[in-house]
Amino acid sequence: MNQTPTAKTAFGVVLMSILLAFLLTGIVSIVLGPDTDQKLLVYTSIFIGQGFMAVPLIIYLHKNKIQLVRALRLNPVSPRIIAGTVLIALGTVLISEEFDRLMEFFIADPMTFDQIEQFLKIDSFNSGIILFLGIAVFAPIGEELLFRGYLLQALENHWQDITRAILVTALAFAIIHLNPYWVIQAYLMGVVLGYLSWRTNSVLPAIICHGVYNALALLLTNLFPADTAFYRWGNHVSPIWLLLAVGAIIAGLYLLNSRREVSA
Image (cartoon, rainbow, N blue to C red; front, side, top):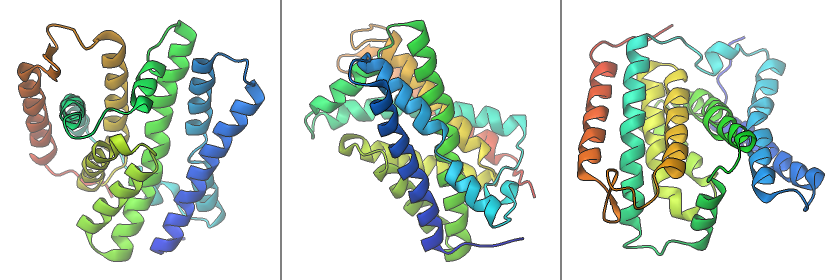
């Protein structure tokens, strides 16, 4: 059964999936109790919430007898596209971090931002595994299936306007992160992920890019503090690393666009 959902239906399915993730996060907090280590509580909540995020979407598609591969853009891609995607992700995360530094000139760094950074500091092997799986594996898979696999494609088909579909999907993606300080970065990342999914006709590059982005951000937070000499330049990312980031993005785009590979 081939069924193109309306924009209202698509947003409704995505909203139900997001609400389930939040509900499961709250349930985990209640079950584990206030005496549980706060970091472990947060990590486990992320792990469970993100792991089940796409369940309502999959149930909806199955109930309506809609083919998962087509509805979620689960088309295979070539190693060339995967390599280009990884390069784009590596460059994007470095530029995004510099954007954070520039934002501090205009918007005061909120306490919640510092608290989030502290929660991302891994202090044990077990909690590190839980956090890594939650934000670098489950979150990219769940969020990309929802936003770039299902919602973006649904809006493309309904509106017949690729640009509008990518921009609106990116806006919804930014809003659900519930952090005003990161809304611009999340929005721009959403545009990049939307472009990757549309350009390759597959959600897989978006999942890979999102996963590499989150994994590298976690790595930078834990291995490279603000005073790391070879990585920082004052309160900014070193210009050398930024040049390498731009080069990685250009190389990645070249690999993606040198030969268009669209899977049916």
